[in-house]
Length: 457
Image (cartoon, rainbow, N blue to C red; front, side, top):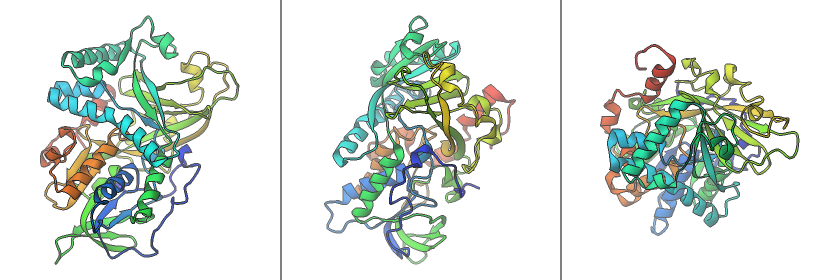
């Protein structure tokens, strides 16, 4: 079932817990609120931030309750790889091919703006979260992906997509030297950032509470139903019921447990991540973050941290064939058995100069991402449910999508705007057409590389 499980694995990011980790603003749930936000991760915290910013000048600011089933930021954001990594060419090339130039430009530039937006947020709010602007390197370890990515980038240049000029391409003769990765066939570098995601989110949550938001952790939402005599919604939780004028689902992978129309449209996908530590000094300093494209459907992602450790996630080569080990899987209380030793010796295998580093696996954890069946998040009013909004389905790529998506939702609520009237890519807009679609890019990719054709789940 698509609900958070207890006793989740311990990610590195949650090794230094904030005082608000188990926070409840009031002992009892309030009886009602103007807005109830379900999910206190990056999306929920960003929604609260933007709603408060937009209601600041109001004589009567909206009352907001933020509900979280487990601890604050205990879902995907608290378990990710630490990247804020806009995609200036891979997904935009697909969008260009499938949806046309305007749609491709929207998704590419929207993501690209997140590095600057979050940098400005961190500076404005004085957030201590190890935020670093950097270059990122996408390394191609097999020839067909090198060819496909280069062709996609060339198509973006021809279409004059703004982000394409930001990408620096290195071919087979220079890729190993530039990337530092053994056997690199090519690499693409561009601007990105990395961050301690838990600290970013908890700062936003603490600020929201200081401005009047009621945060309630360990409060699982069981259902959302029409409120009866009023025009709002009745939000039933494990600790009682709240009446809400508007409800926002920032519940990502778990959304279909409350909105059954999203079953199969946003699906839980279990991933695995690690922290590696070198035991010997004088290893080559990594200044870039990385994606390692190893084989069809298989890739790893990596950031170097200021303490010298490396965060690495991925390991698909050790579990991707076993569909039920990751697809429609909501159990982050366990590791993926076949992949739990994947990260041992990782730096020694791939990176020049790390052969004698003594780097070892310090921690391994799992997390549940919300994969959208068409590859794009669902943002906006829930089709057919006036007063309910969704900000979910970020497909493991939410860090360069969520903050401005949340701002778009805040504009819809506080300024009474439609999805096509706010700053939001058209491919993100929640719609009945997307719910009716039979497309499932996740399963289609898996079918292509690792299975005989199967029925869509």
